[in-house]
Amino acid sequence: MLPRFPQDEFDKLKLALVKYNCALAIVMTKLNNLDAYYHRDGGISPIDHLMQRIKSPESIAAKLLKKDLPLTAEEAQKKLKDIAGVRIICSYAKNIYELAEVLRAQDDFNVVSEKDYLTEPKQSGYRSYHMIMEVKLGGLFGDEVCLVEIQLRTAAMDFWAQLEHKVRYKYGGDMPQHLSDELQNCAEQIHILDDRMYLIHEIVEMINDPAIAEKN
Ligand code: 0O2
Image 1 (cartoon, rainbow, N blue to C red):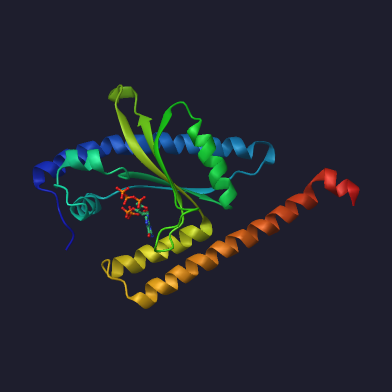
Image 2: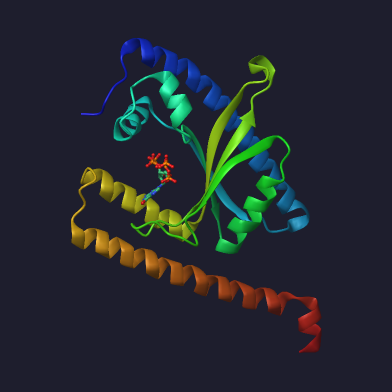
């Protein structure tokens, strides 16, 4: 059974989640605008697609328990940095670093921390680039800020992460060794595939480059 907050803390958390929804909307608007900017004049955007989610009270409670923290709304807001989450799916790993650079340059976001699980994948095989952003809420919330986690990954990495998450959830954190070995193996193959696809993309880009086409 999923853990639950005591009723009074649940009510406080519900109120706090309004702020996280607001922060999520601000980040999504920014990212959609960036995507539209890249697409101007038929250009190519490094963003393939975007996903967003607010962690459910049940999974917030589960994460607090996992970290041995009390089930309070205050503790959740203080200690969990991924209550609001955006996932940016990119075509190639190179786009991930380009976008991270662009996000760092935004005046209205303050990057609180970053984790590069692309160069240093997790033991499970997980690859992704994580950024925690502090977002100014403005409007009725005045000077209040809220944290949003941005996960950047390729479509292949996302495919892997979603399957691994499903398998891990099914076994309640006690995944059989043969499955975790197989998933690690798949993660490596996906990494190689990402590189090979990027190489094809680069070759096509070179062929399309007018300066190179003129020479041939
Ligand atoms: P969900 O359901 O996706 O929200 P910490 O720095 O340890 O205090 P945290 O949150 O453990 O905090 O940091 P981490 O590991 O950098 O990022 C956590 C999130 O990254 C997870 O959130 C997942 O979304 C994703 N993630 C990290 N490791 C893995 C992994 O091995 N497999 C998969 N599929 N996803 C991973 P949640 O809350 O665990 O889950």
